Length: 445
Image (cartoon, one colour):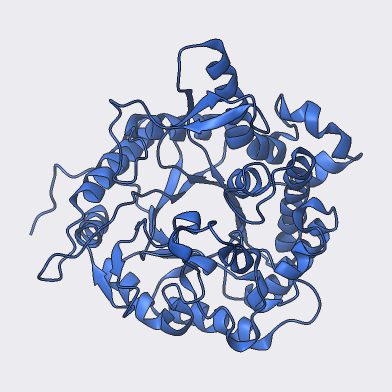
């Protein structure tokens, strides 16, 4: 059958993948010597997670990873982005490693390679060992050293098979939500703690880049940043100032420190007391690609009682939204890709993009997520426009392979290409899974 000439042409080496994270899918929270993470603790606090949900079982990927690799094979993806659970391989965060935990990722990596799927290993996706939180967590300057030692353990164990390495996922989300808004673990609302966490996480990133570079010859190293346009909810000066402040924390603080060796205003003035001589050079280490997580724009309003004077706001009523209320603006995705590629002069990999919904199976068992398909079609088309405009975009990973534990929303928000019945753990392909398989096949044609 001849190729569809109306289909967009993608770069020959373009990478198609799916993303997950350890705490959101693995389960096995107390199996085989795994230590508790800050999310295990937060899930036990009343009112912090919808419906009292936890990641104790999640998708049971810890015991079902081969089944999930078969799902990836059915899509035809090139790559799988996953995270290592720090407390699974180092139950106390430091000290003696856990052989059973290390062996799980051996199996996962080996089975991915056997299936022809490249592993993209992320060292940190928010599940800090509780033992380290008890010692101050990211508010302690020692955390950069803890993380470097953990990175070295992973490199020595997996560096013979893993080429793609990611230091952190979404720096600004877990620092802002965890230390300034109590939306995520560890659930602090403290200006000093927030600033310390920002700077120490940046130091940890820089230290890990150096470790990976020294221990894994030929490693391709990236870091993942969420970047989304921040818009004022109202048309007054107070809301505009709120949006500017949120933009600094959300979009600018981490990439500018890591790639330009400078914090943006107003963060620079506030964080200066925690910056020591030589710190910015330790943070600004050369990486190979920029990981972008993007869903849609976010909105800010002035809130004088909030820690930094801003609060989240709902999109305007007329805004097109996903089923869970996130604004849909694919043209802003296109513009972000073009701007990133021009500003930082790095290849861009879209490491997360997707749409959440309820996704209830029909009586015949089928899961028709037509609105997700529409969203993904619009955003991949926008990505193609960005490439045509000169953006150096090398890959696209959908969030997520499976419905999973979505942090404070528990299991209410579903982002997966495959529906998970959390009572039986049965996986069922959605319409979006079929759409993605066909997109990948057409792109290769």
